[in-house]
Length: 370
Ligand SMILES: Nc1nc2c(ncn2[C@@H]2O[C@H](COP(=O)(O)OP(=O)(O)OP(=O)(O)O)[C@@H](O)[C@H]2O)c(=O)[nH]1
Ligand SMILES: C[S@@+](CC[C@H](N)C(=O)[O-])C[C@H]1O[C@@H](n2cnc3c(N)ncnc32)[C@H](O)[C@@H]1O
Ligand code: SF4
Ligand code: SF4
Image 1 (cartoon, rainbow, N blue to C red):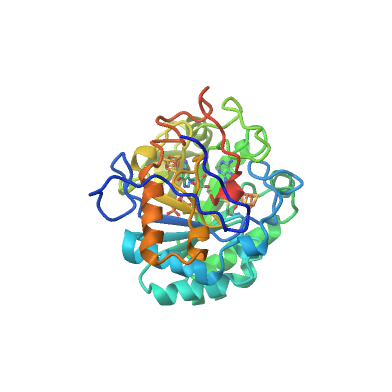
Image 2 (image 1 turned 90 degrees about the vertical axis):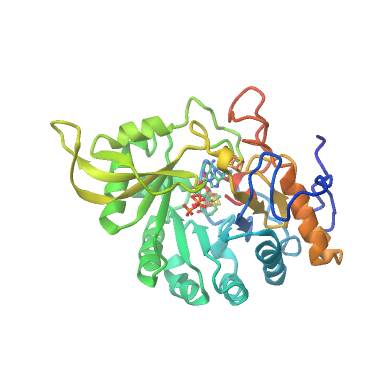
C-alpha cells in the first residue's frame, strides 16, 4: 500500500484510509479480530533528555506549536474514543508530557469529562517532584517513570543529561502523591546498564515499585539498533537469576506488553526461591517474545495522526480532519478505517523486528509516543 501524505506539519492535510467493509461493528476493530481499547496519546514531541535508544544527541526538529493538538482538541478526540469507539483506558505520553505547560489543565479537563476513565502517564520524571501532587489532584490515576540506571555516570551516558537526582526525586514524589502503583521502565543496553539489572530490581522491590525491563526496539532516531546488540528477555531472566528467583505471576496478562513475574530471593545453594514475596517484575519482550496477537493499542501522535501500530509506516490525519470542520461521526469513521488496516505485527503481516523485510519507521519513539 502506498504511503499517504503525512501532512505539512500544520495539521491541515486530510489523508484518508480506505473505508472498512460495510457491516463491521462499531469500535476500533482490525482485520485480525483485535479491538483497540487502550488509547495512547502523545502530548508533545519535545523532550528534555536525549536517550541514546530514542533521540539523537542534537535533538530533533520540534513540531510548531500550531501543529500540535490543543487541549480542547485532545479532549474532543478522547471523548469520541471513549463515548463512541470503546476506549477503556488512556495513556498520556510523548516526547516528554511534563514539558507541556498545560498538562495539569488537560488532565483536569479529561477527568471532568470521564470521571471513571483510568488515565496514566509515562514520563522521564524530570520535574515530576514539583508536579506530582498537582497531577494527582487533577485526576491522574497512576504513573510510569523511565529510569535506566541508578549510577549517575551511566544515567548521564544513556540520557545525555545529568538529571539522575531529579528523576529520583520525581519517583519519590509520585509515590508520596498516591500515583501508584508506580512502574519503572528500564531499557537495557549491552555493556552499559545490563549488569546493573539485579541492583535496579533490588532497589525497586525495596521501595514497592514495579520494575519492567524493556527490550530495545528499532525506534531510535539514529537507526543504530541491531538484533545482535540488544539484550533479550532470556538474557534478562538470566541476569536477574544471579540474585533472584522469578516465577510467573498468576494474574491475567490481559493484553499487557509486560510479562510479569513474582520476585523472591534465590537460595544460593539450590537456586530455588527462598523467603517472602518481594514484589513483581515485568519483562517487555517486544522483539524476541512479541505480543502483537493480543494488541489492544491505538495511538494518536502529538500532531493528531493515527498510528495503528508502533511500527506503522502509514499514518492517517485525524487533527487535519477535525480542523477542517468534520463532525464527531466523520472523525470516528476515519479512526475506525485507519485501525481496520492495522498491520498484523511489527508494522508487517508477520512478526520480525530486524528481519530482512522489516523497515524501520521514519519516526523515532519520541515522535510516535511510546
Ligand atoms: N511493541 C510494542 N511495545 C510497546 C507497546 N506499547 C508499549 N510498549 C513497550 O512497553 C513499554 C512500556 O510502556 P508504558 O507506556 O510504560 O506502559 P505499558 O507497559 O503499556 O502499560 P501499563 O503496564 O499498563 O502501565 C514502552 O516503552 C514500549 O517499549 C506496543 O504497542 N508495542
Ligand atoms: C518514548 S518515551 C515517552 C515518555 C517519556 N519521555 C519517557 O521516557 O518515559 C516512552 C517509553 O519508551 C521507551 N523507549 C524509547 N525508545 C525505545 C526503544 N528504542 N526501545 C524500547 N523502548 C523505548 C522509553 O524507555 C520510555 O519508557
Ligand atoms: S525515551 Fe522519553 S525521555 Fe528518553 S529521549 Fe525518548 S522521549 Fe525523551
Ligand atoms: S508492534 Fe504493533 S501490533 Fe505489535 S504490540 Fe506493538 S503496536 Fe501492537
